[in-house]
Length: 168
Image (tube, rainbow, N blue to C red; front, side, top):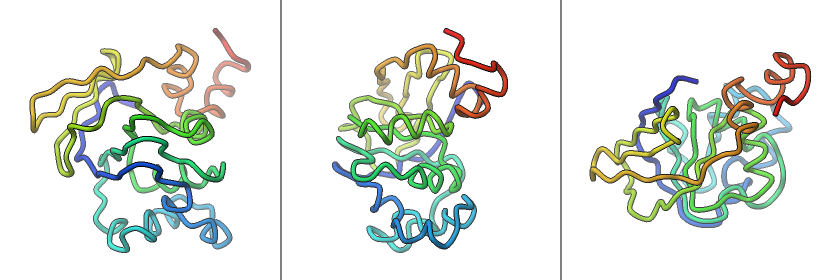
């Protein structure tokens, strides 16, 4: 992952559950991220998946990723080329699935981010989020160093392959 991410805000509200992200029935068809990306948020907005550009950033309210613990809800987001999700809070399982699969979950105040705003995330500077549209900078909750290392490796499997164990 580079030290800077830049993308367009794709806005969602509170309590976006994993079945909204991708229907659990889709994982029966395929687990390939390039297949799953075509069904991203189809239950909320059938045109969403086709409108995603690589680098877009999901922005949501509270309790993002609630519902089941299915990892495919992270896989579909990554398959669409979305590197990060910003939310006021995440379900615990979605948050850990995101870290373990290399999707950056950022906990911050998203109330002043509008759909289409251009956002820059400075990973080398505490994951500071700059809203280029409004000029505002948000400082998210910091991630523990081990989670930062897992993300830098590209996910938990890559991290374990590199280190052989957890290095704290």
